[in-house]
Image (cartoon, rainbow, N blue to C red; front, side, top):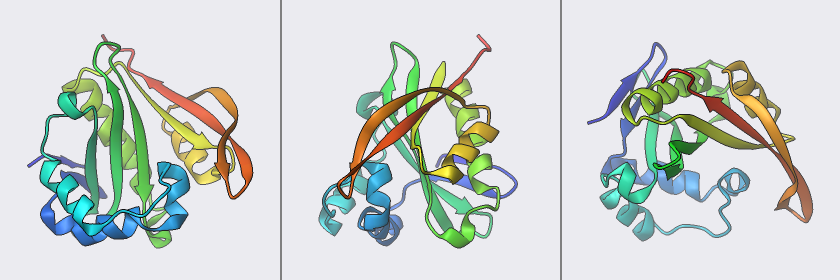
Length: 176
């Protein structure tokens, strides 16, 4: 089992017991904007996904890990996706599900853990993330954790009939 541990949270591989948590997250419309989801997911599809979540990151080009508080409660998910092994880059997506768990430093610790993992174990040279321009908490999270704003994609995401800009952030590993 993959375990990446910090002072406040740890990251672990997905388990079959995570079905209900992931089902709820994937079917919460509030989160669809950040995950580019357009339709609900069935329990069947999520169960199949969990059954295949052990597949190698280099084969499927993604890895989803559960974020757990130190009292072993799931608080969110971190995704490494769009892995490009040749160019040694990958995208990140992070979600702390319950608002009561936001602002506690979980996100910052997760970004630190996942960056260390990607740079040291996967040989990634750069991580990147897209954040809508109105998502102030995510902007603060990435900027406070050394991700640099490198561009803005104008009118990139259509939400409820209105276009939103998306800010592109990068974290480059300068240790070769």
